[in-house]
Image (cartoon, rainbow, N blue to C red):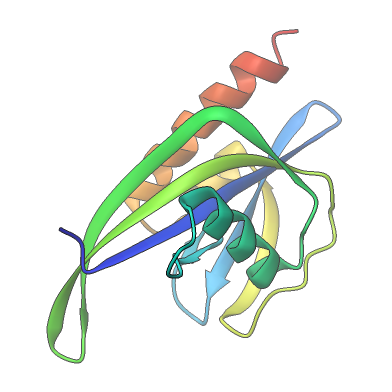
Length: 142
């Protein structure tokens, strides 16, 4: 059982044959992908799409079929250990302009190699690798 469950999306664009991923900086801390808590009665995909819009201002995305990855981690809040699950979907962004939420201090569209270097956590890097493989297989081998 999880204390918290969130959903988000790994957003990408293909610009002149280069895959670029959207990364967000949470406050002055870690870099990651758009995500947030699933609200009561909300499905995972709905939450992922909503969180992208709330955290980036991007509303025009296309979800990639059959990509759903989960990460689990523990963190502390008010002295209590929280077990969290985050479900990520892969989505192509049609929009380039980003308007970050109050939760974030920076954003960047970065190529795969730069994204790997920028991401703060290993579980995010693992999911990025899977996303990159999925995109490369579906889009760049045509």
